Image 1 (tube, one colour):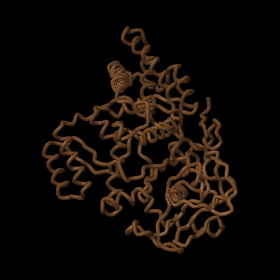
Image 2 (cartoon, one colour):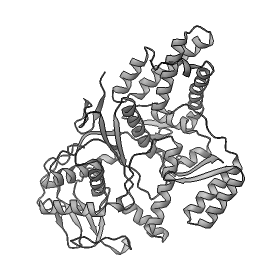
Image 3 (cartoon, helix red, strand yellow):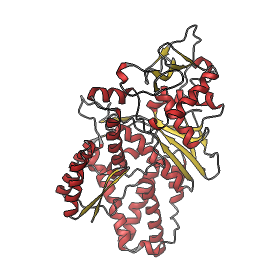
Image 4 (cartoon, helix red, strand yellow):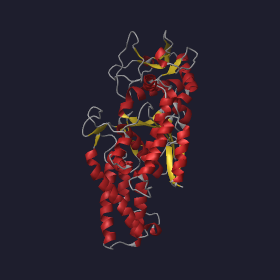
Length: 462
């Protein structure tokens, strides 16, 4: 079966044909860095990771862009509530997000553009929309997109526009699908914005949320690219508005394939702090979860169906991950790597067909686990040829490069070293550089080397 995806825009399953043969431009909506990302957010990020891994496995060259929303209503409010500069909030939570990405074995994007670095690009795009009379200025210096000027508005989310004699406007970044309105491309400065302000030809202010992704995707991937992803909560208003402003500004088709992951339930219901089932990655670490166990739970259901994450399922997912790791060790003991010629067992074709069918991960997992059970028994009973052992190694290695379930060569970090590392991260969050350097020295004295990367702290044996 050729690779196909369910395209949210056309509401049909379509064969995948990239714009440029062998190359894929992929844009995924990243975090709004005003707080820690939670397990619901990471359902989407892990879905996007499996998509990217499968494209790479299928031989495509992938250019992946994930934006960082470091200016919007939420980030500004958080900075105001804390009485600190916007950058202090956004840098802190960007750092935590990058650490969570790495721990969850999510392959980093090729580019992580930050909205605040693309303000001039946003202004240019807004100027084009004004000149085309698809956007207009209000007395407070805000610029709004006129949704009536774009007849295709609402196609992604199946909204039918009603002709309005007078434009209704909304300045909030997020609003209800039942009341589509002209949305803010630029928000005129208000006192609560503090020093979060930029100059524009029509007056000082800041960009709206939706124009940010249009500008960043256009600058990094071009006006027309292959795949745009996000959660279903991004479909309206964010992605609907992206399509409108991008297509109107460039006059080109914006994106060929829109892929959206469904909501994540927790313990069968909505995640809520008041219910005590609101989990950050740090919370799940404290509960003893491994990255592999989390990945297994989130990939055991199809990305377009609601699945329920549960702490009660930890034991079950741990057992399955351990079986895979034990199978990896069994193959290593039988020198499988040396016996492999890169060929796969026959069952691989069924596995591949499942993944090509809109990333049907639950079916692909079922095929793999059934095969692994059989192969494991045959190796144990010494009823398997060297060729088959080599094929098993090739399949398991490829499977793990796609799903990331097998634990390989992890560092055994003593608790006291982990505490020192946590203290150093806190010092860096607080910009206490002297304490951070002192803790680095202490870690080195204990035989550990810490490096600061764009994804957070990386610990190695010295």
